[in-house]
Image 1 (spheres, helix red, strand yellow):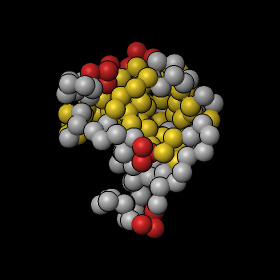
Image 2 (cartoon, rainbow, N blue to C red):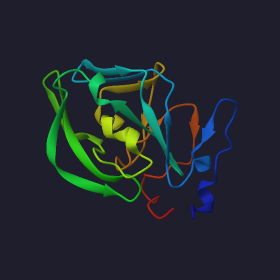
Image 3 (cartoon, rainbow, N blue to C red):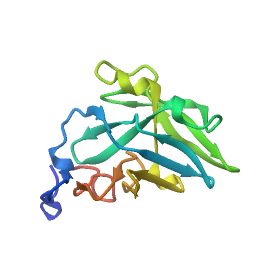
Length: 167
């Protein structure tokens, strides 16, 4: 349960509260134009993203692997496990002479209900030059564990920062 000092912010017109998102998470089409820049280059632009919505977390955008510029996502060893989605595999993100270690991830064989993620990758927005949703630069979710994207259309409070682990 979240601390009382971090009460749910009531969403205004056109906004969503992360406290209205489901648990287990839901996958839905993003219906937005997503752009990511890294190493001074545009590494992906897509209108075919999906977003994962989970209680207390800003959306995580998963972008089609085929929409990334060639050579940007370099597979690396190691996996982690999500209780809902299954085993995650990672990529280094490489562009413009820059490299971010394990800056993107995918679920190549996700559990039932998350199949759309098998052909997409998510990116930590805090590690990129910029990530935008319909032209709005996103704020990264604190903590860099979940990789959520915060826009003016999303209100919290958000899990991920210091002191929020046990919410």
